[in-house]
Image 1 (cartoon, each protein chain N blue to C red):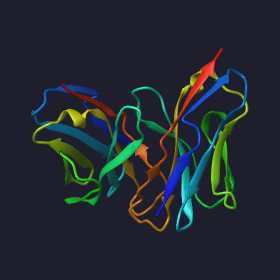
Image 2: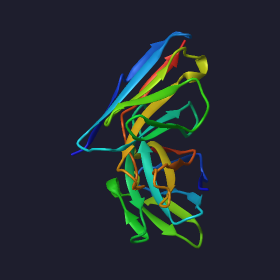
Image 3: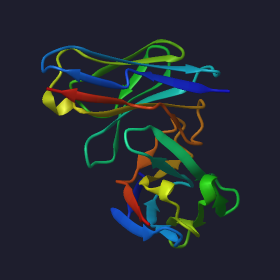
Image 4: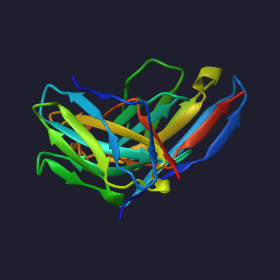
Length: 115
Length: 113
């Protein structure tokens, strides 16, 4: 079984300061991990994914995440927040043994960026 | 390149009325297809997934049904809507038998009144 926990439901940052969104997962098999972003009333956009290659994954819009197996974590970071980063972010896990490709979503972290 | 289309974007329907939401994928064949619902203030819940024409799996018991009449078409339906069916519905696709992430449609905001 797989599950994912996003440790913060809301994060508020000032423009230009670092962003950290925390995610812990559990998985019976080697997981694939993803971060998605959702702007209001929009679909979800893939930011980045980890699928067993390099543990530090770079994504779009300056985001990156590090897979730490020992800590079962996949935290998302960005060095400098932009106003356009205000959105909801979802950490997602999928077991690669699951051939149907079903994803398990975290509850989401709402990011607010203040000027 | 692959694209996914979902419509309508918004829908307001009375309780007891039928529902049909459509999703189509272009630029790929034999995709895995998924319907998710996102209720206000909650995460995404997988409703249905399909690995081929006519093959539908339901994740949770509910007032909804899904069909896949063609390889790249996925339809979400209800015979009689309930107030609790309100939410944001998202269609998604992924490559067959791979878990490399989904591509999502733009979503349908359904309000049942």
